[in-house]
Length: 289
Ligand code: 13P
Image (cartoon, rainbow, N blue to C red; front, side, top):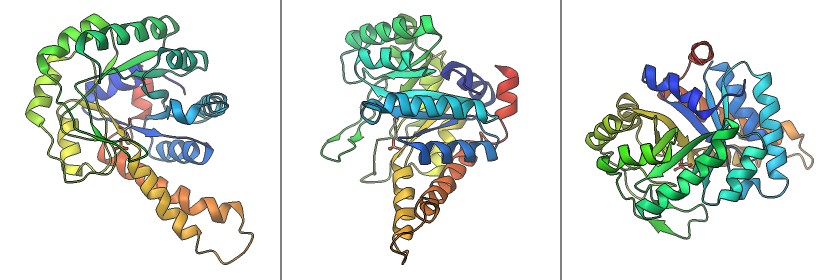
């Protein structure tokens, strides 16, 4: 069933686990993530980036996801990932997304507040939850043409930010980065504890890929309730693609081409669900929402 970001994260926050948030750009990814989550009886968040939704993507991904969410007997949130433009927030609302992220993390505090508040004013009247980011989770952009340093989130800004914006979830910067890590990260758990105390909304970890499992577990134990994963999905799918490319037949069946990709992605999604302890939570989340 389709649920809001706010509802899916409430149970996670109360029960000290995190929901996996996986980027999807087409049917094979969407179906693999949802089927795996259902097999694990786990609530799940599927996310699209505006760049991947351009043109017919809005209709295709939102249409498929909404239909599939009703088919699968688990809570599913359809979420817009990293959005810098209020027009895309409106598009997401119009297409039935149940969560949106407005990312003003590169803006000065006051501007971030102003733009995030505007996103909330667009989304909330339609029952759509809003995630924002304070501090900045750096790392590599998707094209790997730019690498940006992270800026840790300041605890003393959190309470004010949440109060002024009315957001439902907050992405915090505690040492993770997007993309493939150049060196193993060390998360600032002490800072996370301060942020958890300061925020009365669920906290989100971006850059979940490549972050050592023990550190992710520790972060979840200390208040992270949503973990975003994209890079490791692409790496897993690429392993599957290389396996499929070994096929000898000149006209391989679609299942033989997409199967290895889907299975590699499914293994990763299952691993992450277990790591975040969201397996077995689906029925309870539904009961509590
Ligand atoms: P990774 O690609 O590093 O997993 O980060 C994903 C993410 O944070 C999407 O918002």
